[in-house]
Image (tube, rainbow, N blue to C red; front, side):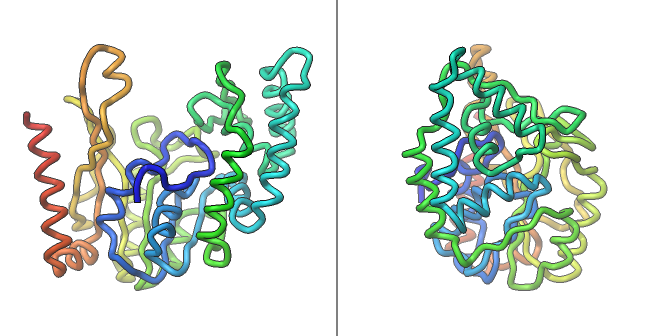
Length: 311
């Protein structure tokens, strides 16, 4: 697997580029992958690409994102056709494509929260970043330099993803704790919760964020049931740390993943590497250690990244 694993559209915060590293901490085979904070389901798609699991649960509190994913997987032809119609309309507007973007955004906020409108807004907005105002309206601005992903490219990726997951994925838009309650031994839960660095109780990618203490306490549900899990959570760049570490009481093993050079630091003339933390549950870490080849590989990766940071 590589960075060319299919994706529907650019999405800020997506773990698509980190997926090859994250999957190395997963068993080669397991029953079901569950994403309680799926976003655009990059890890689900990557795992399906490698045929790691036979079933997938895609959940996110953002119902429109879930609606988009479900249509892409279960009805790809309808999504491509509908997106093509919306995307093509921007060239007919007398004042240009920006006027069209704001029109679609207004329709979306007025209640027409269709999968194709969500996809178009993601394809056109700045950095593929979902942003909502305090009133719950989508308020991200358009990228003025481009017209959004061409339908031909959308079509190729959507049909590939559909082939990977159709009939194997189920969808929901509920509180993450309900997902924890339904998880069973044999499942693997991958979590990429709202980023701590920008919010304690609210993240603009969501209508409501999560409290650090609520989240860390809820993980004990999975520990009690013996369910394996992996969490992308805090991180660091240069001498700055982002977010709080998960409690030691969870007995997770923490690894640091190289997320590449910080764009912001580069703009300031610095070359700081961003590292994202990955927490592996106790049971899963013990499984890794019972497979020496996999553990040696992970230790080499960790030592390599640590040496880079020291130097």
